[in-house]
Image (cartoon, rainbow, N blue to C red; front, side, top):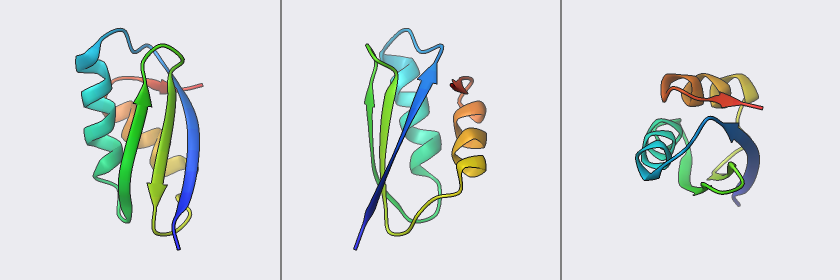
Length: 68
């Protein structure tokens, strides 16, 4: 059974931003997909188990952006 976590990321302005967030968040353990909507900043993360919000925030920060 998978779970979906949704966060809003600020600071993304282009396709490269989307790719960076998708790559960093996608490296978290158990993540099976990351769907990023540039216009709204919405990031839907599908994973095998619930994710720690600090881990998500750290991955987004590593990509150069912030969870709002």
